[in-house]
Image (tube, rainbow, N blue to C red; front, side):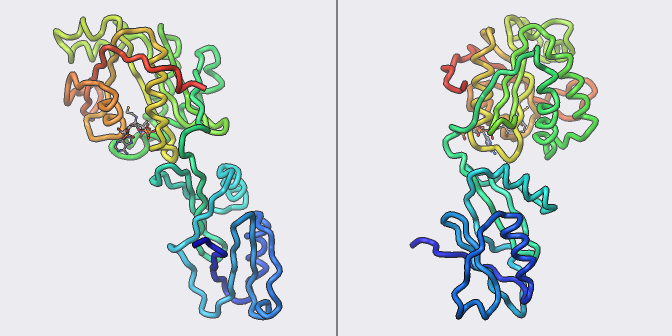
Length: 308
Ligand SMILES: CC(C)(COP(=O)(O)OP(=O)(O)OC[C@H]1O[C@@H](n2cnc3c(N)ncnc32)[C@H](O)[C@@H]1OP(=O)(O)O)[C@@H](O)C(=O)NCCC(=O)NCCS
C-alpha cells in the first residue's frame, strides 16, 4: 500500500482561510479539483509526494488528535516560518530517530511534521575553545536551561544564572575542555570539564565525601562538570558522543563527577560507560538534593570518530 492522499475537513465556506494557511504559510501548491468534485467546495494541495485534500463539512469538528505525519527536509526552517506566522509549534522528543513537532491549522486540525535523524550523520561534535567563549556562552546557557527544566532537576532562572556565573569562572581553569553538538549549525548540546584541583569548592566537598579514597580519586583527575542536551534531540546518541569526545580529549587517567541521586538518563549513560558509584546520597553544602559521586578509571580512549 502507498498513500495517495490524506483528507482533512474544514468548515463550509472557509477555503480562503485554508489557502492562506496551506499555500501561503506552509508553502503547498494548490491543485485544480476535477470539475465534478469542485462543486462540493474544499480545496486540494500537494508538495512532492504529499497530497492533501481539504473537504468542506457542514457539521465540522476539528481533528485535534488524529493527524497526518508529514516528512520534511528542513524541519527547522519550517518551524521558524510557522512561528513567524503566529502558529504555535509544539516540539516532541519521544519518537526515537526523528525530530518532530505538531501544530494546528486555523480550524483546529492537528498536523505533525517529522525529520529523521536516524544515523547521527548530520550531527557534528565540535570543540569549544576558551578563547572564543563570548561566541558560545549564551547558546550553552540556553541549552542548560532547557535540559534541566524538568524534574528531577526543575532548575529555574536563579539556578541558570548560577550556572552562567560558574561557567565564566570554569572556562579559565587549567585543563578546561568543552565540546558542543551541532545540528545544521545550531548548538543543541554541550559538555565540559577541567583538571580538578585543591581550593576549588566542588573539589573540597568531594574530598570530604570520599574520605581516605580522596587522594587517589582526586589526583591527576578530570572533573567532569556538565553534560546537557536540548530535549528535542534526546535519544539519538548525541549525549554519548559528547561524553566520549570529552573523555578522549582530556589528558588524565581518572575522572570524577557528581550527578543527582535519582534514576536519570544521565546516570544510565554514565553507568553504561563504565563509571562506578563512589558515594551515594551526598549532600553538598547549601543544596537540598542528594548526589552520587562517580568515578571512572582508567579513562577509556575511544577513537576520534565522534569528531567531525
Ligand atoms: C543525559 C543526556 C545528555 C543524554 O543524552 P542523549 O543523547 O539522549 O543520550 P544517548 O542517546 O546518547 O544515550 C546514551 C545512553 O544514555 C542512557 N539513556 C539516555 N536516555 C535515556 C532514557 N530516557 N532512559 C534511560 N536511559 C537513557 C542509555 O544508557 C543510553 O544508551 P543506549 O542508547 O545504548 O540505551 C540527556 O538526556 C540530557 O541532557 N538530560 C538532562 C541533563 C542531564 O541529566 N545531564 C547529565 C547529568 S548531570
